[in-house]
Image (cartoon, rainbow, N blue to C red; front, side):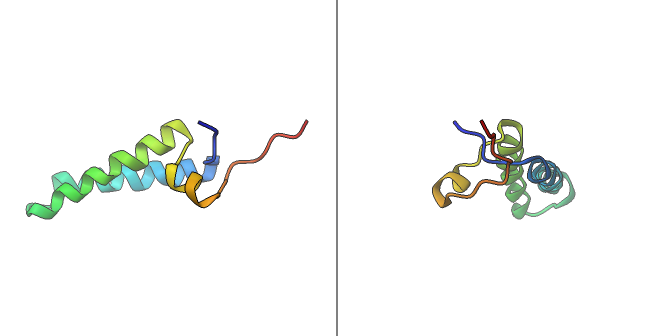
Length: 66
């Protein structure tokens, strides 16, 4: 897995992931399980790799120069 998620992108993913996970505790209807999507964003932030970015050819991290 090649890194394709940059630092700013990772920070935003952590914020969004935690916000989505909080829905599990804040919403009382069946829609609260949508908050589990936050686990995906937290995983991509932790690994600095996003499968959707790989498919689309997007890279938000700086490239290393030789």
